[in-house]
Amino acid sequence: MTRRSTLQMLPLALAASGLSSLAAADEETASPPAVLTVNVSNIQNDKGQIGCSLYSKEDGFPSKTKKADSMLFVKSKAGKATCVFKGLKPGKYAVSVMHDEDKDGELKTSMVGRPKEWWGVSNNVPPERFGPPKYEAALFSYTGDPKTIKVKLRL
Image 1 (tube, rainbow, N blue to C red):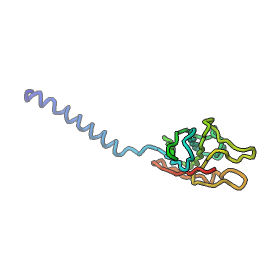
Image 2 (cartoon, rainbow, N blue to C red):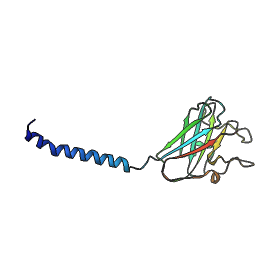
Image 3 (cartoon, rainbow, N blue to C red):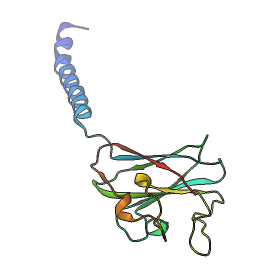
């Protein structure tokens, strides 16, 4: 390469290095992804699937999954499972989890409404004397930063 062509290439090289520095700076200052991780424990077997429902309002909580803001199913392994909700907006939420052993997408209950499949909710709130846990008791704040909560299943 001649001295003249080297001098002509210098501005291009400097511009390219400046752009890569800007890209690296953007990556460093970019906000963390909006992710809520739900670690589920006390799963009795690896049959079926684990269903996690996310609610931003009381309507439908904890068992009407069609009214949930988001619902996903994952497989369990060695008594544990992890559900990951992405792209959440900051706010107050409650999570309901069920071990859907028969993979029908619903929590099986007795004629009086008592669960026949293992279940749990955020804050590990127990059921009321004559009904499911209260939505307000299961609420937690989500700021938009990555957050992990734990839910222990019960029958």
